[in-house]
Amino acid sequence: AGATVTLGSEIERFARTGTADASGAWSITASVLADGAHSLTSTATATAGNTGVSSAALVITLDTTAAAIPSVPDLAAVSDSGTADNDDLTNDTTPTLSGTAEADATVTLSSDIDGVVGTGTADGSGDWSITASVLAEGAHSLTSTATDTAGNTGVASAALVITVDTTAAAIPSVPDLA
Image 1 (tube, rainbow, N blue to C red):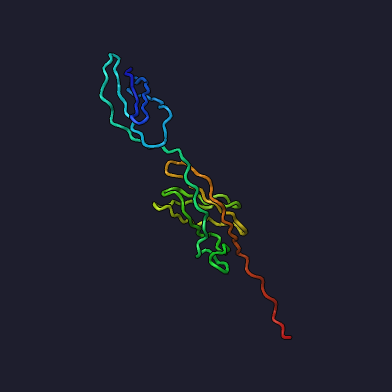
Image 2: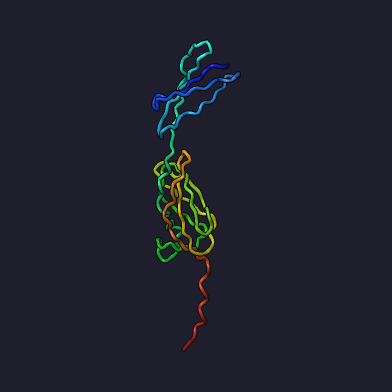
């Protein structure tokens, strides 16, 4: 209790001090740290002036950089029911979309009509696949955003416009023998 605690970093070359309370607990606000790995140690100096050995290092990695912009979502061929498997027309109200993002990032898929329609995780190579929740009929501009493992969310991707059409074709007229 009452000891002066010094928090230091070999990388940032700073030292901040605080005082331990009656239970030995202490709190120190460090200076602004740069992104990257940091090794923080503390020492305690008793009121008589005796300084103990440094603590074991607490190694932290600080990441304040936004996640990279993910690729434009792509409608999976299995969900594309138009005349070609790349025309982005579907009768599937829960289509599957895929793309790439920062490795291990959480990817959020959003529609300009329905809002957030799914989330998934990019694998170690950055590949992701999301089956959307039920989409309303009509044209949807779908974008993806990535949130890295440190919690930094990046800018949304460019949009992919898909059309969900579940309306049956009109019944043709009765044949007429002319």
